[in-house]
Length: 82
Image 1 (tube, rainbow, N blue to C red):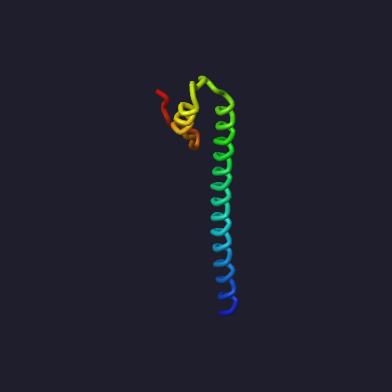
Image 2 (cartoon, rainbow, N blue to C red):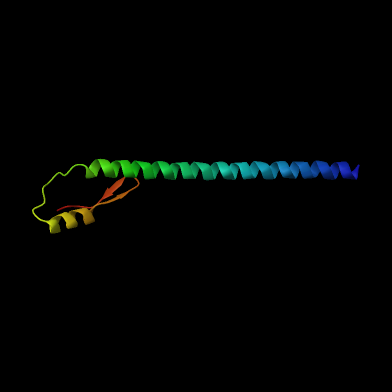
């Protein structure tokens, strides 16, 4: 009788552990998928925006300053050209 209860308790414990691992793996998968999607969106937006040259810079120094003032983050364009 004691052995049956012990085996039953071990099975229950293993089941709980398996559920926790599956939830953890699911959470990690979702986070990695979201990160990959954000990277893909940023690279698409960067490629799309960089293909347009809204102004003609009078010299190379202006081009360097303009490019260094813009930075792309997850959905954000930070910088100002004044």
